[in-house]
Length: 112
Length: 117
Image (tube, rainbow over all chains, first blue to last red; front, side, top):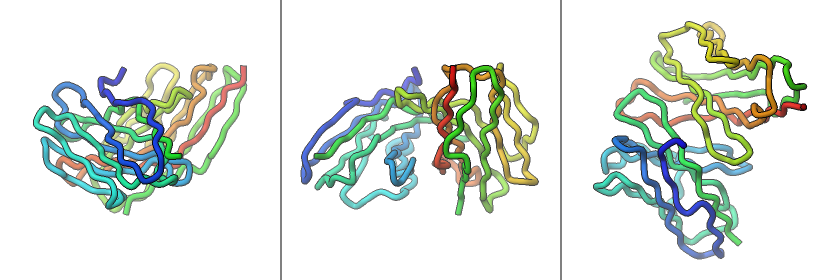
């Protein structure tokens, strides 16, 4: 168990809908990362938050947004969902600097 | 731009054989970090190792060993006496060490390792 908790584990929704994925980082970790794993794109970095502030952005679509709350948990919001958004979404957390990231078990999103 | 190449898409070996997973990376940074993660069939990503660019010492952890060579930009992973539980997809990853607080990982495409009993 990595200590990173993601909910829900599975999510099935229809095209055009909006969903929210939740992540609780390991205790004390200030950085939260979101990654998308799909068959065609592999593991792609989406966005990073550090102590409540956005720190880095990767290949994140405009339909997607995220935030990190004062208690350090994070949410990834996906809207106007398309079939191609079906993927495994991972959250990871790490301490301040220069350390490894620990990943949650992921949320498998299926858009039908 | 950073890039990680895992040329081996799939490898199958018979149990107890040794197997090496290759990883080649590209970066312009002088400070960087290399990682290996394991993704078993259950789907989670499990951290295995992290090395920084200034430490080229090879590392051994039980049946696992890693060979880091800056001269060839490679960070290879060897499993000795493989076991069925080693069956998984293994990812090599790279992060930029010069950007304080940004530890985003650039992943390779992964190598699917199957250990045949």
